[in-house]
Each structure stands twice: as C-alpha cells, then as structure tokens.
Image 1 (cartoon, rainbow, N blue to C red):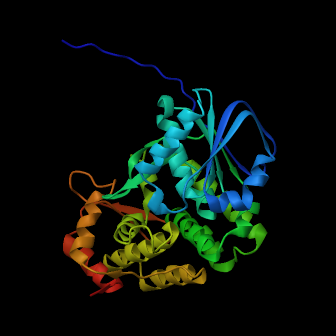
Image 2: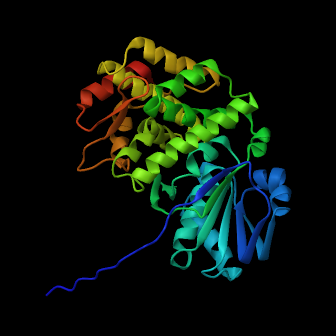
Length: 350
C-alpha cells in the first residue's frame, strides 16, 4: 500500500543584502536580539536606536566558538519561550559568524520556524557566514555537524561596525575573501595582490564583490549539492584544526588560511598548481598576518578526522583544490598516501 503526499510549495527564499543602508527598522511584532557581551558593549546602543518593535528583548550569550553548541541553543530557546515569542516574531543576529549561525539555527527550529535577520559585525560574517542560510552548531565530532539550511529575511552589512575589529578578526575575514577569489575569480585575486583593504573604498568594493560571488553560488545550489561545496575550499583541513584545538587557539578565518595552504600543498603535489602560484597565495595570506602552518601531533589521527566532514560521502573524502588560481577542481578519489605526504610536507609531526 502506498499513499502519495504531493506538497506544492511556492516559498520565495530570496532576500536582499544591504551594504551601509541600515536605517530605522520597523517591526509590528516581538523582536529578540541575540548577541554577545563584546558586541553589545561596542554597538548595541547604536542598533537599538534604529529599531522600533512592539516588544524588544536582548539575549546575550558568551563570546567564542567553544560556546557554539546545543547547550547554548537550549539556553536561547528557553529565553524565547519565556518572552513568549510567537510565529510572527523575529530574531536578529547581532555579532559575528558564531552568533549568526546560532541565531539562524534557533530561528529554524523555534516553533518550527520563525523569521530572522542578520546584522553581522565582523568582516568574516559580512562576506561569508551571514549570506547563504547555513546555520548550526558544533559537537565533539566536528564543526557545524548539527544544523539546517535556513535563509534570513534580510542581511545588513555596516562597515562602521568593522572599525572596532581587532587586527586578528579583520585578517580572519580577509582569509574568506581570498578563498572566494582563488576559486572563482583570478582577476579578483590579482586585485587583492595590488590593493590594500585598510583603504575604506577598497574594503567596500571587496565586500560587495564577495557578497555578489557568494549570492551567485548560493542561488545555483542552496543546499550544497554541487558548486556551493567549492566555498569549502580550505575548510576540510581547517575544521580538523579547529576540532583538535578545541576552537580556542585559532579564529575560524585563521584556520581557513592554514587550510588553504594545506590544500594548496596537496594541489602542488598533484601538479594542479605550480610553485609560483603556491608562493603567491602564501604571500598574500601573510600580508594580513594570517597563520600558514600548523603542528600536527598525529598525522594519521588528523587524516581520520577528515571522515567527520559533512562533504564525505560513501566513506570517500572530497577535497576542493585549486586548478590554478581562479579555478577549482573537486577530487574524491585521492589516495591516502598522497594526502599524508602533503600533510607531512606542510606540517611538523612530533
């Protein structure tokens, strides 16, 4: 016996990303802002001056990737219930990528889904984490292994929030920007080599360019069944590094920078890129004081952790590699010894 359930959906998941256009936001409903102490201390007063809502609540969670877990999600959901938000209510993510990921995840599961808005305050979140609808938290097995695809109602990127970023946080965002240029746009990578992002006009241009690139990719592949996986270039390695260091040593973008170098070492071994290309990428990452190496304690353990990556399918690892600067190739049949050899060359085993 079979019963067919034919669900027709006309859900429109499109939304706008606004750059330096955050004016007064009017909400005829309850609104909760999820943030952390650092961001609220610096910018919450500014944001509150721009929001009118029936009822407005502030939910504050600790700052840091190590708090991006189900315990924190449970805490946030309890606060949403206490404030009696309903299905017409809205949550605002006000912070970096960690806040954005958790806010989106809470919005996707609270009352089976309510709307949320992203107002990212870090460069990394503005160019990458806040756009595309990836939400989730980490667990002991790896990064973002519990989550959902859930698109925001809108994204507001204000470069004024970036003026208070520490240099490390700024560099972490640059790593994600370089990632996009390396995989999709050779001319953009060469622009990075020639221009300084400390110049405000250059920064605005680069943010817009990265958002346009990611928007195009997400529109083609919302749930990472194809081309969107390319945005994980460097991340397969980075997620292992973050997991091994308990998310306490490197910022996400810093781990991505190391992951890019590791991926490039593998691509160099496979003759997909040449030494000059490898050196150019490493030089650009170092320009923004990003780390480019990592000490592996046990290379075999490092390799085995790859299998917890979300892109792994049928027990086969999938690596996003450069096929020269500005182009990419997806490899899912690389022999273990080739990968281990690349790791040994780029890292120090003790």
